[in-house]
Length: 259
Image (cartoon, rainbow, N blue to C red):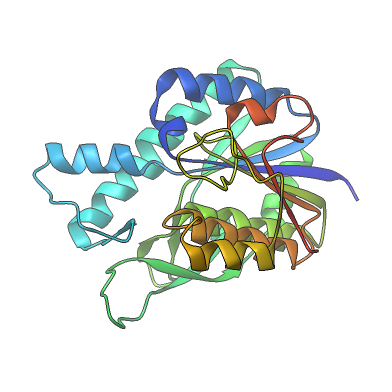
């Protein structure tokens, strides 16, 4: 099967013009077929503030009421996505911007209310990649924003790490998939206060051990849950790194392993 690399970029990387341009340059230089999945939470928070809409976060997750849904749809699918697409075109990559609603790519259900009402947040239920495969095989580079739809005309805010993992799992039937989570740190750290304390190889049991002790916490937990889910669903390779990690064969950072 042909190789394909799915890069999910988020955090400060996608919000800072200089770091984003560096990442996109390295992304374009990656060999073979590729997909970019992006976040943009800080931009959404900034625009919401300018519009007088209060941002509510619970354990790092955004509460998405109807007004916030309008903001994230505008920012993720519009401002952030199209700026990335335009930058990729300037770098010679024929990119197309997509959400989960486009091509019926990713369908989700509104998260049920348990202890917390997250509002219009979507949990992925299906991924349809037939049309996406056709684009990819024509060397088009999909740029996917973290939005899904419910099939009834409602957009839903969906975690970008989950979007990347869901796409990787669906495409693993057709391609040899490399999944890369790229953010501002060098990888998963054994000491959160030491940016050089990178865990080079991380098993699921070691992840759970570090989660119990609090070494791995907050936003890294869903990232790793999604990463191990992808690895167990036929994805060839999953690693977590920074923009520098896209250089030199994707061998830096933290490699998730089944051991």
